[in-house]
Image 1 (cartoon, rainbow, N blue to C red):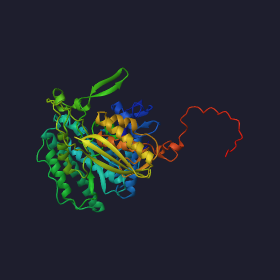
Image 2 (image 1 turned 180 degrees about the vertical axis):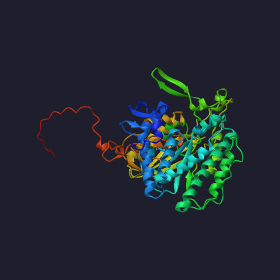
Image 3 (image 1 turned 90 degrees about the vertical axis):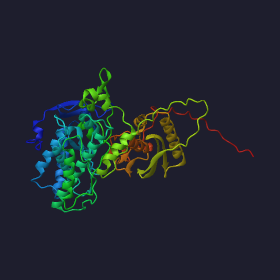
Amino acid sequence: MARIAGSLWEGVALRRTRIGADPDAPPRAVALPDSWEDDAAAALAALVPGERPVALPRIAEAWIARALKSGEKAGLVTPAEAPHLAEGWRALLLTRRGAPGAECWRGDTKAEPRFVLNLPAFLEPEGGLDLEGYAEACALAVVFLDAVTAGKATRLRLGFADLAGLLAGLGLPYDSSEAREVAAGIAALTRGAAEAQSGRMAERLGAREPIALIWPEPPSQTVVPGLAAAARAALDAAMASPGLRHQALVALAPADAAEALLGAETAGIAPAPGATRAVETPTGVVDVPTRAAMRAPQARVAALLGPVSQASRRAMQAAVAPFLHVAPPAPVALPAAPRPAPAARSAPRPTLRRQSGQTLHVTVGGHRVALRTAEEEGALREIAFSLSKEGAAYRSLMDAFAQAVSAGLARGVPLADYVDAFAYTRFGPAGVVEGDPDIPRATSVLDWAFRRLAMDYLGGALPQPEAEDVAPGSLSRAAEQSPLLPLDLPPVAERPKRNLRVVA
């Protein structure tokens, strides 16, 4: 490929492996940098659906070329700037510091693109953070998102991932005030650097949005040297702009395979999953240290990566929210703590049961659907469906199904089990999903519902089905499926005809 010659790719040694996007997927040939682990190879296979071989340089150059072409056509990128921008985006990917979301890897022009920065990749060997490199990465990401949308989008989605891994590398407990100050500083630096770049673009192309009159105040100090000053300087630089090109820039999002490709273990501000993770090997399933555990001081791994309460998660969310243009995703639900049996034999006084939840309204294949959820202490406990165009029999079946799932959730069945069982189920109605920007299409109402629940409560987005899976000619419609019986029914013997009389 001509674009690879003379670029950063020339010095990269690639290895080839055969791996699937998940353990159940058929293996395919994948080429990626020699030092990257098999998890990254599986993520690359997931980012590019299909069975054909996939190579990181070729796929990355595709989205780089699309961004440059649309940016130049819209007058956002000059021919002189294009080589520098391309090398900057390549450098972010090869250092695993940043990459666009799955929609850009797949060439999905209808989905809203995003760009994610992997926070632990900015840790410096001697301690601290590469703050100048992080600010530059934010600027490169803003230019990419503006170019790939041809300058038409006024709301961009720049986010960061694996805050928990960064805090572990800094030796900070997730539920400490020092950790929240660092998180707020990073969020402030992200917003300041992004808006400063938007302001520089406004100087050349014209402002479309005014500077905010009320600014959130960044932390005055953090344990990371220079972070508070860098955040303040970035916000001041944005303030000095004549205006902005974009109405919103910073938004955290559920993780997709792009985070896994970069080596991020958690999305956004989610806490670490623990000190170990299960890995399947030829000899069985074994527990290996997480990347966060390998970064943390070994004597403090257990203390730094222990369970985190919902209160700590909400406190972290409150610390970063003032610097985001979109509210961060809801914290992953935790199982309710077991309650000890009452000591007295007398019947306990009944208490009023209080639940919270939400109602989501979408259209799946032209059919209006409402999904209602109920939560207790942050954990999903009940679901219910409302369907407008379906017959009474179908609605009754869906009601019974929702009650069965709710009964299982109330008795401790993990939501992940239901997601594994019912995501990608195929039956009508199916097709384009309207009203949910994160799930553009679904193979059934259950497919949309359980992938939505996985995003809201399990902290991750599942891969989108292919367009042909939800097309009118796919097997997603019951009327178009082949007969379920493996053999034809035996012929029925012809009975002799009889003459019948009507007897009055």
